[in-house]
Length: 386
Length: 111
Image 1: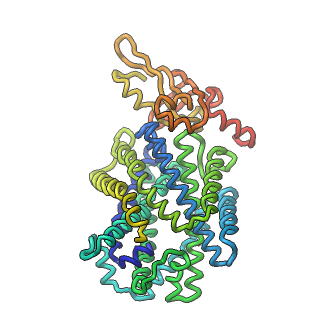
Image 2: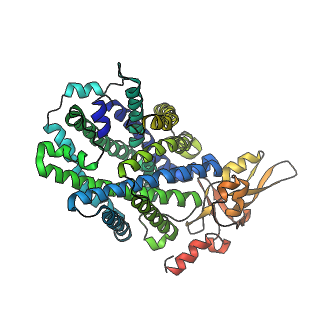
């Protein structure tokens, strides 16, 4: 987000808005499918795509989500390093151990509350944006879909890469694996359709507002000075500019819990995918000993993700790989959802209406185009660095 | 379940979650056995579950990465219903399903 803002000021804001509407559409659909069919997303993927293509989707999703989890563990370690000054490697091991203990020892509602509420310190980025009195007319101009005129070919490719990366970052498929599994486990039924709609819209909307604040802060503070915020330590200076040390501290705490919570979600999303595909018991509300293969799956994911971090790859580099691999998996993850969502055999009177179908297929076309363009754009721009 | 078109049977059972008599997840329907009656009507005679079936459904390079070769055959008489999941009339351990999971559950003393 910050790099996109620093390089292209507000001109990519519209991509976040478009992608946010997209993830709201698919999130609402996945919750509705979970409520009506009582099946989570990976069961639906296997039933609709079959074993072979379903397995390919699983493998792709696991690779993408594992890299994401590694980037998040690295991110937590970096934040801890900024707070304590200790060794990054040691803190990566400590962070992984703490995340494992969180899942193993805490009831899931406590994990949600702890990481969710403390992650709200991230709101300091929104407050910082308001405090610096940004040019609201320019921000409003960035909300209009646009391909900037007069750019060099190199900048146009960079603009395309960041547009695809933002779509991927907002529409990460693990969010839906996690969300639909939660819906099934919480026993959603047709009575929960309205709650699902509100949760999908508000949950995804709040995250995207923060993403937009990060982009705008970067466009305002870093872009004009020629600073490219590639490190977490640079990004967290954004709330420090208006609020000083307190702003930086709140920003770091917010990032610590938001990224830590996301690491737990991505790790569990991997375990959900494997267990649902092969028909093993799963569940975040059950005790770890009641779901032994599910427990083993998320433990293995954490250990593998830590292994990736310990190779010395930078979290931002890992995040780039995660974003590109995630967009490639998106079409295979979302197609079964669209097919089941419109199927009245499963969905009865809660099948997709005209609006959900139209938006769903329009966004599907968009993510297919983004998936096809992702790897060439990544290679041509060296991950947005050229 | 019977159908004039065998594809209807395949769609109705294959790649659905299996729930045992107690409602516990105990596998996925990896394939089905069918027989054609005298009137040309197809009938599901058994569900096939386990890695032994995967080879015929996916490229070998893909399935060779997965462990195990066992197949469990569940007679049609043991199937209670099908919908978004297939429900069975017996418990998973009676049918020989989810053996690894049951072994681990016994070891950790949690069922």
